[in-house]
Length: 418
Ligand code: ADP
Image 1: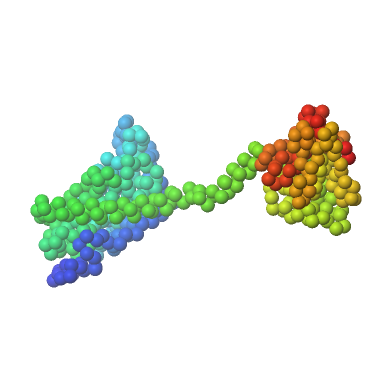
Image 2: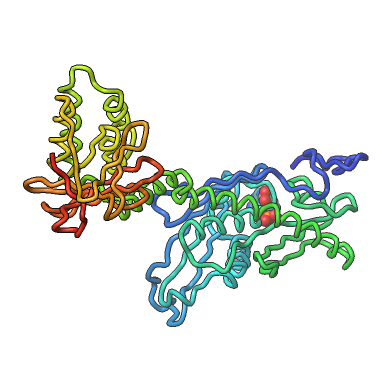
């Protein structure tokens, strides 16, 4: 053993490792480090290095240990022989048996053992490197490993010690302070502040204990934050939906659109129209401005919308299924399609000379041998119904054109002749 330093706390209030009285040592935690354990944790706290594996709930053996009403919790603290400066004697010792018992008891109030009768929950603690405070460090690591194993708990357990060094109350003793200090007081707390471990080695006054408890609460709060951060990092990562949100929104939007604006998947006639328009564009030696625009739109807008744009900008006056095709073909050949109704119903009102068919007085109707298409909503919904269905579009904002279905079908009074 090295000689006792003259001072464990310098005149400016710093400890040998540079910490102030109320500071804990740096802590590093890794979770899920053992593939064969149900939960595991590797923790470094100062120079302490600790590995914990949790197994269970699993059938308890031997059976005589089983409890009919709850799981049996077993905690085994083991110090590796190489973990200390002087080789530690392998195997259980009075000290390790004591630490195992008090540590198990530190978890019993939080582990919901009643959910798993006749089973065992095993916590194996291996101290790989010891530098004072190994029981508190092991409890912190076990808490993480239990959570990693998915053991239901009412909350995490955090543990930290305070002690008396050079007459001062300090938090989280290191090896020198533990060896040459006047007292060591390990504590474990639940998230609710319930004390589940309390031991004392040395002499302390009630005031010193009170002061020490204040430090321990502060230390445990910091440790709890570290534990929660580590657990969140592991368990919240797969649930990071925000990145997926835009995708989800897209899906929602698409499904909404599908509700109001039947997509081409559900409107084969509309698909035929689109194809026909594209063909018409190709056929035109000098595509019209409108048609060119329609082509551009085709690449960017959703199908239903696309269809409307194409139809609108291609100046289809009265269309239905194949009538669209014919109309566009006729246009490309400079043959206008003319639609007539009893009260005459085609109006070209937009710059693109869209055709609007609005009411009984202003309906555009297209008739084909087989099909009609109808787009009906202000949101430019396109509805394809049957071979005899019509497409009717009434979007005043985007183009006052409308395609109505067969008058014999819809009751529209408009008629359209090619
Ligand atoms: P804790 O590690 O929880 O503080 P103790 O107060 O009993 O438990 O031990 C303090 C430190 O003494 C240990 O962290 C370890 O560094 C050292 N130590 C414990 N047992 C032995 C041992 N058998 N041989 C050498 N060093 C030991």
